[in-house]
Image (cartoon, rainbow, N blue to C red; front, side):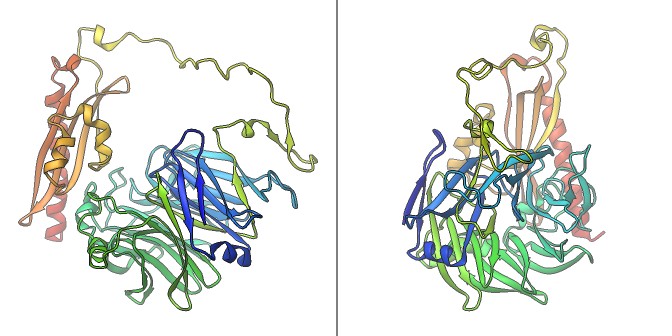
Length: 494
């Protein structure tokens, strides 16, 4: 069974389901949803009357954590957390859908690399703030309110020090988290991907299990704490202070949901440079397999693979997965067409009303003027411009391609001949919000010593007569020295 989806002019996505997946969804009377920040999409998967899967696809900016609660979905995106709520009345249908999620509320958090999120019994929204290495919650008037951070994290700064990523709820409260390391330096987890991962118990601050490889998606279910050991491709559970694998999956496992005696596990293809050196990579080579993107449904009683949904096309990675009970065909409204304009409901409306669309509505075809008063260009002023210097974290060879025009020497050319050795850290210079300078350094361990090397340094020609490049180097060297000092402190045990 193959389905192909496309939103507007976006590249197509192909899904190939195993033979009995449709019948399983029908027998269990469920649907499911999943996110992919790599392709900026939210997918809702149900079934049509013709024996085929019904796939609804919506575009969001970097969707990651996804949580289903009653008739709502909660979704973390690049700088917002969204609440999508069902607007259909009981028994109502809209275009053959029995669940219509509409983006109803959002909280602007800023870009904090929010990963897992969940809703407590008190209806509070908790989430993993990866950049600040903490558990946070929404609070009116602020981007977030910090709730808890690992005891090995010394301060609340946006440096993605340990790559905190997963959240498990127990009895309606945050209980467990996963992290890729116990590092306390900026992006220090990148050097500990193979065996630095931990599971922590929030109430006691204790590390429950160590030695994992990039663990994700902890979930408390049926009296057990289940975890995905992503770097080894294993789905399993925590037994005392050990991880017990149940099954190996041919992909980077991330995203986990449960239904009855079944587990739904998300699989992602390997990013060659980011995931180099993981045990999963060698397992795939030994088994003559390639990494896959899709969804695996596993029988908890037997520990065997029951059904699979293979995904090809523009989508290569998944992040989170949810089960949607008692729904045949879910759908979500997006912002790319006028349905979100025209579907209206109110108390006593007895369901959705479709307002009459107007022709050539004012504003739809007119260019939007940016607010504010025009400013004098800084380049027309003789004095030193107001330059803002800022750290740039979470860099990879892939996302650095967007800065190729600001790399000197070429970073694209570097990766073709030099493999990545360690963490990448950048320092940017900007004027009026526009980047005009960029310096990148690589930091890696060699013979028990932390080595730093500046691999690219660039300033726009119009600004090269200012001492901007020198200041970029000074700022970056200061940050590198702070990281090196912190590493020395951690190694000495002080």
